[in-house]
Length: 191
Image (cartoon, rainbow, N blue to C red; front, side, top):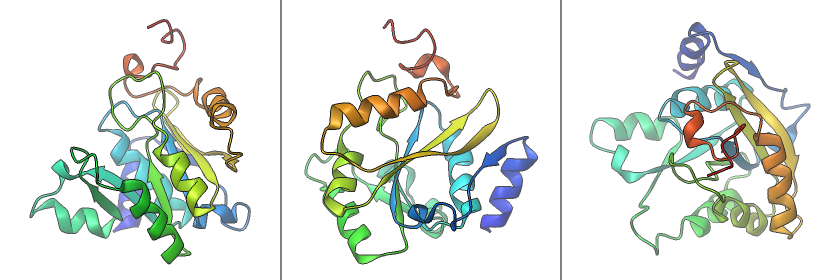
């Protein structure tokens, strides 16, 4: 089923810039921070990239997308249900436990935590990586170039602002599905 998903995305003209797991073994056990996240289209391309490298992703998605029809399929693809309306959902704690219990899993998070434009990334993905003792791998989908893949690996230094700046420098030139929704895109950071 995963190979079919990959094939369909490639059929629509996408290509992937993905290393082998021998080149980037951290992809087996990390937090993948995927940006920019501006459209539901991201969900169709993003998992294909993750599947193509052979990683075991756990993709966090709001519970509203789960129902009796979608739940089995989403669970099969490693999607984890999150109640974003509950401030006490302990998503960070759940993700940390998952990473500590499963040595062959990567937690996938969109740092913006929404498809709406935001000026700051939420810190949850950073806290997950820090508490679990795993690196952050930057994942991207460039909708203009139709290329997706993995960028640099960031080992959390404890200085969120410095690490955040490195992430923004990497993500800024990436073309979002909806450029108006990507605050850090070319010309958009005048909001």
